[in-house]
Length: 141
Image 1 (tube, rainbow, N blue to C red):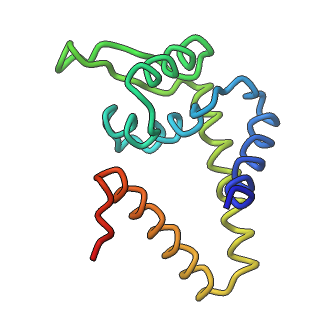
Image 2 (cartoon, rainbow, N blue to C red; image 1 turned 180 degrees about the vertical axis):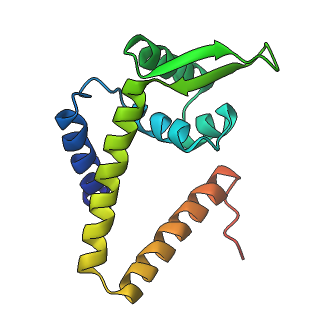
């Protein structure tokens, strides 16, 4: 499984390097992708990344310092922050999407539709298992 996960990571890292984004920190690409999609709250991003609030804050600090993200006070709720991609952040997110799409297309060429459906279902079940263990291991029966 580790080797399989590495396929995406390697292609993404190559595409980021090609675009001049070698300084993107660990988990930075995931956060940029969340922001590019725009449909996750900060709490959901923290949970999705599987990091503490402190680690998330440090990641945001790094991304702000390196010019990938802006951080502002939320005008509707001054206790909250608003994160947004800069042009550099959008460029890095585009590189990540390009790399991910290339791997997905390669999978589509190498697997039948039935095999692809099985792979997707297996990955979904892995996500369900992770969530059940986080809730105290309810095996779904």
